[in-house]
Image (cartoon, rainbow, N blue to C red):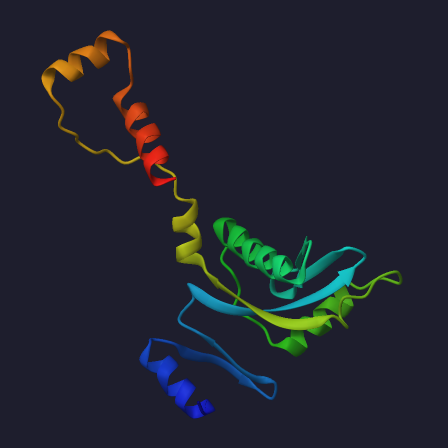
Length: 165
């Protein structure tokens, strides 16, 4: 697939260009979905991931886990503050040099990758507030549950968790 065909397909799916520079194009659907530059570098047995746009770092046991942790870091940040618009790879490298690099360890020369985050989906994944549901059951079963001091909400939750895994 050619680049222009991919861009056309992405635009048809609701994506738009948020920035284009010499290193390529970053695309995002809206402020809820974005792609952020992340520097990852191995440090001993761990992989450090630095997200310059929020000036924060995390780590994982593998390169893949470092990417997942960077996504989770962005998602967690979005719960307490709005995420800024993504910067460029060059801006992330420059910020890493200024803010994170030390004499003992430099992450600015790590591998530049891009991590996507859908803040709406992230919030939904963590949404554990209770919702009210009405259930119908035979009167005799309701009486027995009351006599046993059972919480129907708790029993239903436990049964659903067991059934759904």
